[in-house]
Length: 196
Image: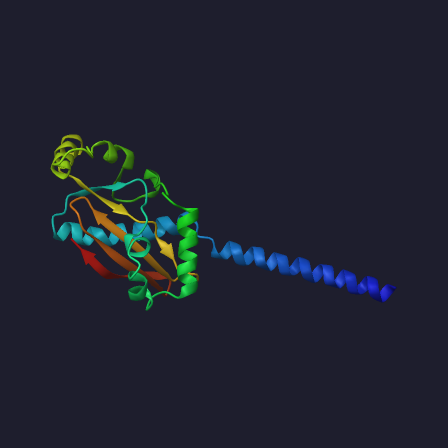
């Protein structure tokens, strides 16, 4: 009987240790708000170099992140991204999108740019107008001047958090898909695609 009790106690302790390990494992795979802001602010610092070279007037960033077109709307793009991400990474990214859809940026956590409301921008669009784009630009410039904005997708992390996919769309149309790789605790960026 003592042997049976000792065996059951050992089994219970083993099961509890297994559950604790799973919780820690899950916590390590969660993407934190800090990690999201670290990536966005890294990109904003990178953009500063180009902004000054091109005399870019991008003053604003949209407050809600979007879904990355390259991953969610264009099914062929996964093939192009296979050299950066595994199938497990893609599944992990899909979960991130579900959990953080329309992640809202906070001004006090963003550097260099002023947050502009997605809702305000949407209200400047007359969807019934045949001149929708031109009228939007006129309405936008009346409200915000000739300072333009960028819209970021939610940064999507690989399972090991060493690779990130992020898209940036421009006010004037077009955008770019960027892959970040962490090397020696620092991000390095590669523009994978540009569209106009």
